[in-house]
Image (cartoon, rainbow, N blue to C red; front, side, top):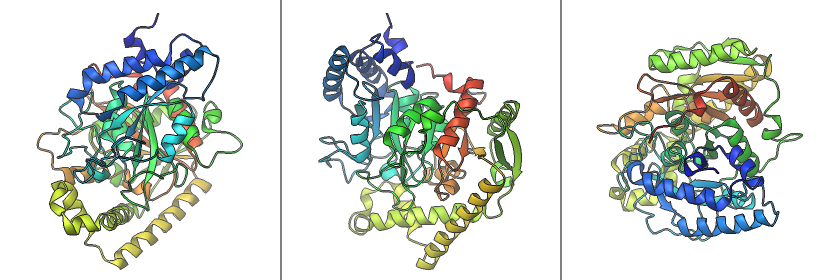
Length: 457
């Protein structure tokens, strides 16, 4: 007999096995997670909408199907949360904003259709930074989301509710969006594995945009295996000859790990973050991967270019709201949009050219020297909510993620340690394919315990 505590501490992979074997039912699983949400959401503010009735109804159908011997797909009966910037038919899509409080979606986003087709149960919609324009999920309209490891701290953003929900075992996995780091930052601050897929890998149809140029959609879960399962389900460009999951257990010994020597990544970074990432590199070396020192001459330029592009896109999307009702934006988002209005058209063009040069440099680096690049995900662990200066704090949290958004390559954040205050630390892995970053992350997780740790709530 599996009790509720054991149920909500499963991974997706474990739950799939137990459901297929008839040891648990989708209905038992969903009810356990709904009870967890009932107990914790008032303190964490991770969900803006809990889809209780539909989740229970769908889980009942899924349980009946299991008893009949049917298999609806790899995610049959698995409760998944959706960031509230992604359309779910019949539910509000607020984007965490005052403007869209009553905006009801008429149909599912493409990724929601794919999740349902794989058998997933959509359990609710998660909190976010307003219009995904920020990295803290300190939201003036719906209150702040809170980090399960320390509720005085931010879970990051903009997909902060998704990170908090998975970290607190309020769902088995969650879907976020990532423009400048909005999946990777919450994954790092909440102790999760989360991926920003390569450009065009997962559909953004039915997602309210932050930046048409840089937006992606990506899953967050506890393990690289779980993330690989979801990526394979959402992939609109299936890998050949093997999926991410099929490649997960391939050996990694002999692969080349690139580690930057630039001060940009280390000089102003919290010493505990530096120590954890350096220790992770040493562990990978012990596993038979070779370490290659690399250097980037234009990293500051790339950081600035990625910010100019994303905020200019956001200003273009919100120009009517900015003209007619600017006071309805939160103060920090309004400030960011004002910053995004300042660069000129030539500045935007130069930034786009910097992106093309950056991608050329990285392609050559991966072709000639390395297989995976490793850097910290954030320079600091989860910051306190009280007194936070959201614009400046956002710049800090996104410092190491924004440049790799402009790479158009898959980037994954994986847990690699904890601070002395028991706050999670994450590192980014960048490669030419989702399969490669997930394979190395999975191997690392077989050799380390960080992804198995869960907050005490």
